[in-house]
Amino acid sequence: MREYFRYFRWLYIAFAIMLAVFCVIKGAQAINAKVSYYERTNKECATTQRVFDYADVLSDKEEKKLTELIEKRQKQTNCDIILITLKESLEEYAKAIEPSVRSNEYVRVYAEQFYEANNFGYNKPNGDGVVLVDNWFREKDGKIHTWFCTTGIVQDKYSDADIDHILDRVYRYVETNPYKAYKTYVNDFYNDMQGSRLLHLDIPGYFPLLVGLIAAIIFIAINWKSKSGKKTTNAVTYVEGKRANFVNRQDIFIRKSVTQHRIQSSSSSGGGSHRSGGGGRSHGGGGHSR
Image 1: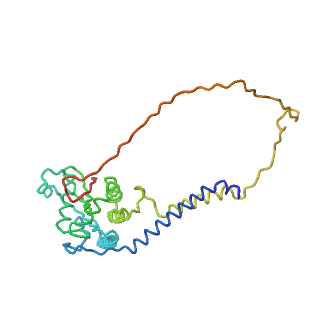
Image 2: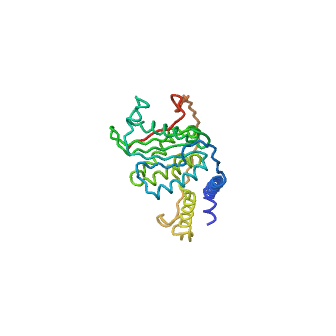
Image 3: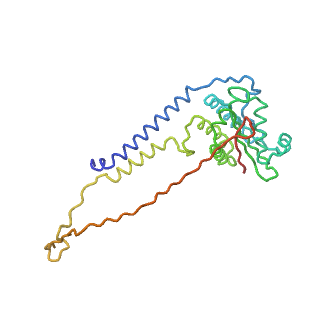
């Protein structure tokens, strides 16, 4: 058993280090979540309401639970978090403000106008915050549109990939369980702002423990009651007459020949993407359609 452990010891040491680091990070995040409650400094917000279920896709109980969750997450992120559901055409409304706006961005116009009209922002009017507008009405293009609007520090925090990820997560549940979808929006936003998301991978907190447990089970299963097998052969088992006949063979070094070839090296370069806002607007964000 000890020989097997010595052979695999670096694997288990690596698992132990990974588990320890994960626990430290998770512990620090948990402590930070409990002690880091920010005081609201925006005194000009027009409403204390954060869930506007105009499409009536949530029950009263679900709306209340979302409101309580949002209140908690706002204090932890120092950001306003707003949810709006609609079931009406926004074409006329959006084109009155931006005549050339495309149908998939009617919800963007609505989100930005709603945010500014109510002076949302945790730190100041039109300050740090986010709003998700999910319009259940199918516009003339035959699609339902959703917009994730960012303002202030949230605009700087979220890249295009981050926005796509959170909207993909919402769309995973929205048709079958709107409450779960909108709860995911709130919690994922919190995780993103806290920096506890890892490369857009949805890794559960128990994952390192599960990996360690599986590794331990495999190790025990392989080595449990292990022992040496019985010796059944020897040097002359398969030799005719049961007598060994050793032939003396030698390799004689004659000469050495060295050939050199010049290998041409090649180099490659990669490119990156750059995201920037346009038009000098104070909002960022992105949308999905279904």
